[in-house]
Image 1 (spheres, helix red, strand yellow):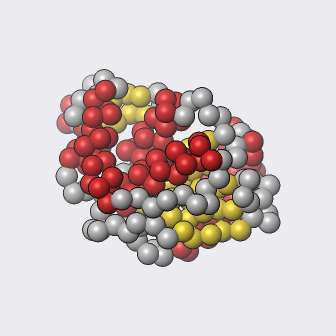
Image 2 (cartoon, one colour):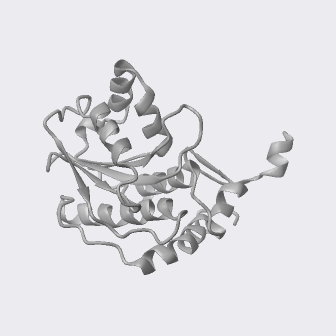
Length: 215
C-alpha cells in the first residue's frame, strides 16, 4: 500500500467515483470544490436521483475538460459513447482551465437543451466564464448536430465569496434538473435562494455518509 493511500485514505467508492478524505474535507470549510466532488455528485444524479429519466445526461467535469482538447474524431467517439446526440438535455460543469493539467479558477454551468436548440450558460461570478463557455460551445455543437443552436447567458444568483462557484454549480444543476424533469425545458427556471447555497455543503456530507462514506 502506498504512503499516499495511508496519508489520504479513501472516503467513498461510488460507481466510477473515488473520493478521498482530502476531497471530502473541501466540503467542511470555505474551500473551492475540485473535479472529484462535482464528478461524484453528477454520478449520483445520473445513477440514483434521475436513473429513471434517460433524457438527462450529466457530464463529469474531467470529461468536459477532455472534450476541449480532443481532436474531432476523438470527440465524436466520446459523444457516441455517451449517447449524447440522443439526450435532450445535457449538463456540463465547465472550468476555465485550458490546459491538460489539473487547475482552473472558476466553475460555471452549461446546459444544452435540444428541444429549445439552446446552450444555456449560468455563471455565478458575472461573465467570468463567458469566453470559456463560448469556446466550448463552438467546439461541441457540430458534433451534437446542433450547428444552428444558439447560446444564451442566464442571470442567476451570484456567489458571495471567491470559493463557492462549485457549490453554485451543484445547486443550479439540482434546480434546473428538477425543472427539466417536470417541464421538459430550461427556459423559465427560477433562481436559487442563498439559503440553498449555504446549506449544500452539509447536505453533501450527509449524502456521502448515507452512501457508506466517511466524513
